[in-house]
Amino acid sequence: MPNIVVFGSLSEVSAKLRRMKEVIANRVAVGYEPKQHDEEWQYHTMQDERVCEICGSRHGTVYRGDYLVSDFQFYVSVGAVKVEVNSHDCCRCTAEWVNAHEVLVERLWRELESA
Image 1 (cartoon, rainbow, N blue to C red):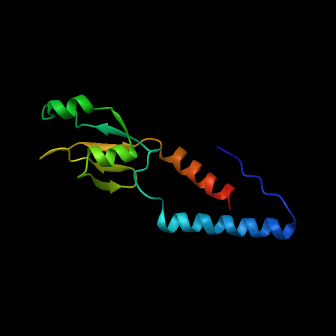
Image 2: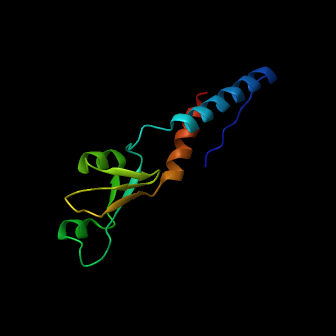
């Protein structure tokens, strides 16, 4: 995880820390634009006898967030890090965001670095 070094006079450091607090509060309130390229989403089937050939061949495949949107236009979010992909009628497959922590820390670090 990257480190952020804050330096300057006491008033400058105080202003920068207030700005960082604002950035963090904003991210907590609104989050980030969903399904960006730096996100990795792993496709999961139910792994039972009802899985079709198309879905079966996708099991374990990792998709970038923006590709997930284009390849599975009818996905439905079922949580912060999980979606139902709905690649065809009666599809029971999901995708899970596997690098969420790393991506969110990196995004926040970039924002705070410029704060």
